Length: 583
Picture 1 (cartoon, helix red, strand yellow):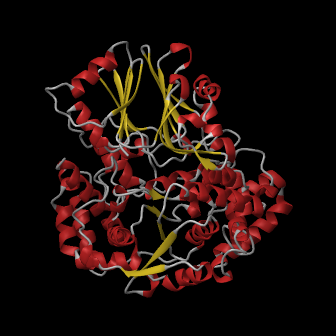
Picture 2 (spheres, rainbow, N blue to C red; picture 1 turned 90 degrees about the horizontal axis):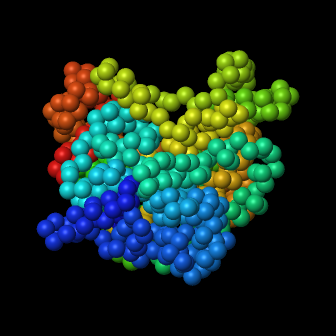
């Protein structure tokens, strides 16, 4: 589904701009109009359009409430629709969740409101042009409507290379800003403003009690959320590694009686091959499993699967998995992809001493002793070493999450500019926040950058149901230290599904890594990648230090360590730049 929303900041601005977009001389092929309001036009080429009763707004996308999918505006009373508007969106995020964009009349006729659902996968990018706000989930539609080429924002590119997990509101396309899930724009009557309607900090800073981690409640929320998401589809293909997170999704789909099959990937090197774990899960759940081998022949490092996005998020080592999934989907008649992505982030997988600091500040040293022991067992670090780090953190009183900056191979002035861009409101902890809480929120934010940029997402929905709003809200309210114990991480999630999955899966610690396949790609396309970086856009724009890049390639004839991964990341960005320049 693609949409385009035009809201005038002044009376008549929307009509004037809209007429210029669709007039007979322009010939621009835009989606059809689905709603019109004073100073607002909504266009959408999908069928998931909910018209709220009494001309009280429109919801694009999918919304769930009380365990079911909302299929039409008839399921929402006129009184509730009015409350949605009068509450300026707050009532919507309290009553509905899903993947939606809501367009509402502002109270007292003060323009229009545009709200993006918390944790929703339906994107929203906006620009300000000719006294109008233009918003869409597709930057190509913004470019088409404005008839102006969207240029690369080189500071945005630098920020991505400095801290790839951070997702600043300003994208890597000049003038294109992302509306974060849970945020709202007010536009019209000469005003334009942005507001937080929902924030993860509302849940991370609640008065937490370890009883919130009670496994039956967690399992119930996860199962219901996944059942809701699955109810939209007839035939699901699940990417299954046999790790805890994707296995929980598989167990929930089975419990929901969804029609699904699973695919797992094998590699030449055993470190990236997890099919024996996936087989255990599918045998236990009596579900069909397809095993497919990754082959480097299908990888094109010069192409980016994120060319349709305003950020260089795609990674070349995921291309082959995406190709396999698309091929298998066509063979099976699949209408959606599911995955367990972001499970580590949602289930509080932290390895720093921050959770120990949280517990000491909340419950004292005696309670902290148990957490120190649990953390030492999980990280294989001695208890005295854990306490030394924790005491330093307690003395320093630093509550914010320290970003993992990587300035390797970048020009110094680029680093300085990029650091200023590496910001997001979620990464600014509240005054009462504890460091482990800041870590949980940061992990949640980081997840958003790794769940798009796949070729198969263009064909049909690519769903990561563990990021559903109800699951996220509950998991944020669980104390940071309650997520691990006895040497295990994600303990509440493990206990929640211990009766639905094999014991070997519930208590699995190992993780398959893409390292071996990435090494194959690097070795096969070494010369291509070297040429791309030494003679490409990053070098010409002086984003990278060309001489240092050349030296890094010499050192990485045998790829190992972090340096070859840095070169791979630079190549992924260079590929995105090459695709963008052709648009």
